[in-house]
Amino acid sequence: MKEIFRVAHEPTTWRLDELAHAGREHLDSEYVAAYDHKSPTDWSEDVAALRALGVGATSTVLDLGAGTGAFARAVAPHVIAVDVSEAMVAAMREQGVEAVRAGFLSYEHEGDPPDAVFTRNALHHLPDFWKAAALERIARLLRPGGVLLLRDIVCSFEPGEADAAIASWLASAPNDPSKGWTAAQLAEHVRKEHSTFTWLLEPMFERVGFEIRERWLSSNHMYAAYTCVRR
Image 1 (cartoon, one colour):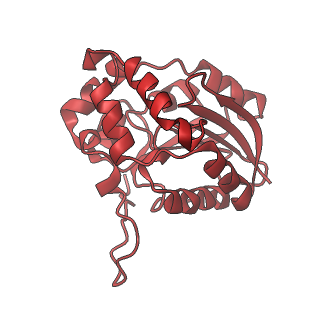
Image 2 (cartoon, rainbow, N blue to C red; image 1 turned 120 degrees about the horizontal axis):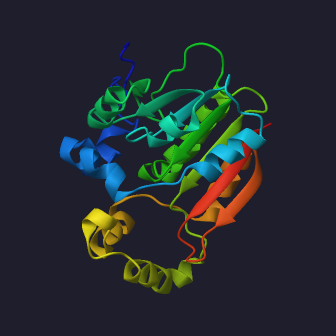
């Protein structure tokens, strides 16, 4: 398969190196092998959301930050699964998924525009400046009327409520790392990764040409799901 992964290494060095921000565990083949057991997911609501917006068996779906390709295997139409991790891409190809090693900022699409883009728990690896750049690239990739489904760790509390919200989130974490992310791992996420606030993310959608059709916020104010349509 054609290798189209590119991280910019032009003479200017201001572009983000997505591989360096991917989280070192996602580059480890042993971690990747256990990932689906650690994070099992019911994809039925996401698949239903796409179906309701006309994404069917003949559609092309782009999965950005695809991980092990679990969503790609569940959704069924033509899916191009994209991930910056060589270990993740290798795992997907072993499962028969069409996988490309690239990132939000480096993937180059070939052929007709995709009908939908799906991304789950991946955009938070990018700082806000680069989130906006990634969303603008996604909007340009999609056909008019195309769908973006984004599910991620997004904070819907006020900045002054952070101590209480984060403490509650950490207290709900499992102790066994094989059953999910522990409090220590979630705390590391808060310190080192780039989850943002709803009131910062939502204007990005609007700015780059998306209409937010549906929004779901978790009761603990730590997670959000968006269904957006390109205008």
